[in-house]
Length: 235
Image 1 (cartoon, one colour):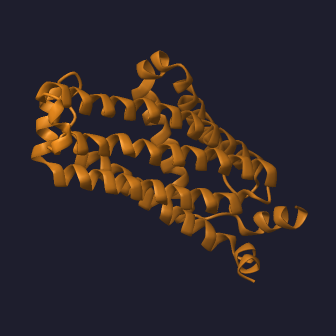
Image 2 (spheres, rainbow, N blue to C red):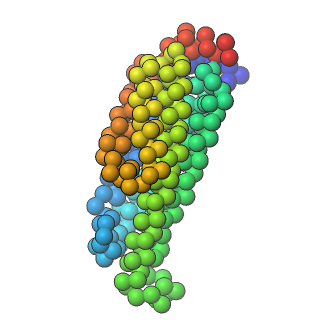
Image 3 (tube, one colour):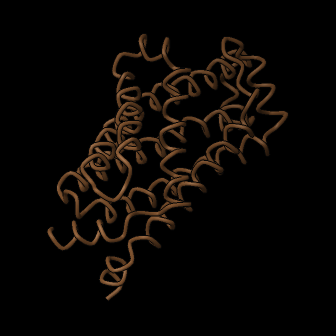
């Protein structure tokens, strides 16, 4: 019954998707803001001192990041239902890549939590000196960055598939699909880390523009209900 109601009312679903998309953006930005300046690349001592001096802020950043990941899981599920009439198989495949990316990102959070454990002063860590503990904390943060690069590739494939589904759909502007597809190509560039690191500012900018545009369109305009229902009936 709920599925029939949702299929009969695609506009509310689209706007709910936009709301969760907005929550994702807000929590992701806040999470990075809380952690901004705490990690000093190339300076293990400064990083360790910052984390110990701002433990609550560090933990808040970690928690907010996990909430952002949960919001994106919800967006993924809603997108699957929204684009299922266009191509059920591709919509399911897109959801798979996104959920794998979210799972990898959630796993990567363990590497962000690890410095708190390493620097926590537990008795069993007394076999290491201060410099070794600081280096180990920085190593975990470096591993976090490497794992995040892997999840970017999965999100890149997801954006490519969503972009294709938007282009094929008749209920959203094709320009949104083109933007998402180009953003996906940018994220897939993380298969070649040296190239991706060189282009990182442009990749991030394109990704934000594409997903922000899609989010705002869903929030403000929703979808073309008649065309969505025509594709749903045809499917």
